[in-house]
Image (cartoon, rainbow, N blue to C red):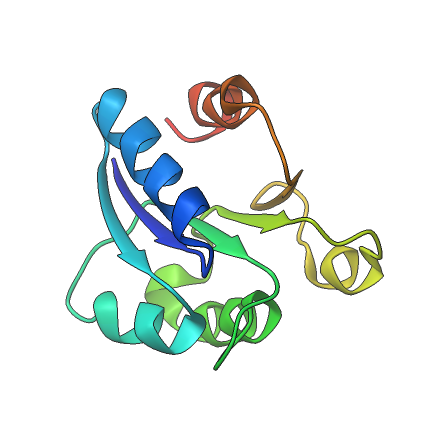
Amino acid sequence: MRVLAVEDEPEYLEMLKLVMKSVGHSIIVASNGVEALKAIEGEKIDVILSDVRMPAMGGLEFHKRIRERPEYANTPFIFLTGATDLNAVHAVCHPGRDMLLKKPFPVDQLLKLFSGNFK
C-alpha cells in the first residue's frame, strides 16, 4: 500500500515512516499540504495521513484540495491532531473515508485502522 504522511513535527513524521515501512507499506512524506500536493504528482496513493495544524497549508485546506482531485475523492484520509477543539475536523469528515486520530496515539491504534479499513 502507498501511504502519504503529511506532518510538520519531525518526530511524528519519522515515527510514521518507521511504522509504515515496518508493516510493508511504502510511504511518501511531506511537512505541509503544499509539499504534499507536489509530492503526489504522478503518484498513486492508497491512504493519506495528515496533521491538522501545519505551516504553509494545514490539514483542513489540504483535505479540501485533495478531495477536489477525482483520483483522490475517495482515498481514505486520517487526520492527526493534538488539538482539543475538533469541530472543524468533524465538519469536513465523511463517514467511511475520513477518520481522526488524536495525538499522542498508540502505534497499535494506527495499525488497527490499517488492518480493518484499507484492504
